[in-house]
Structures are given as structure tokens and as C-alpha cells.
Length: 43
Image 1 (cartoon, rainbow, N blue to C red):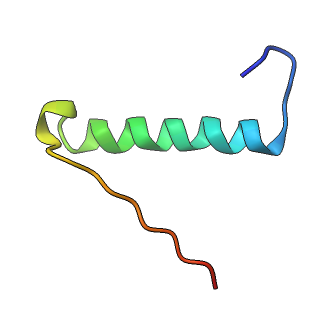
Image 2 (tube, one colour):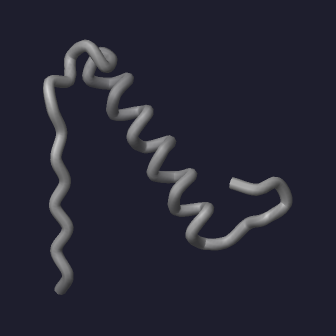
């Protein structure tokens, strides 16, 4: 993210990175994760 630039996309990316980091922390770290996938559905 560029300094001084704040867009909704940048905010969403920052929030996703924070969320991902927290999930990794809560499951005991990277060593406890064998694989990960994602699924997105539009309604």
C-alpha cells in the first residue's frame, strides 16, 4: 500500500491480511497448517 493513499480496496486488503494473520496465530502458527483453500459465492 502506498503511503498517503487510502482506498476501499487498500483497506479491504489490509483487513484481510490482519484477519489471515490472526487466524494463523489462533491455529498455532504456520506449522499447524497443511493446506488452505477458499470459496466465494455470489448471491
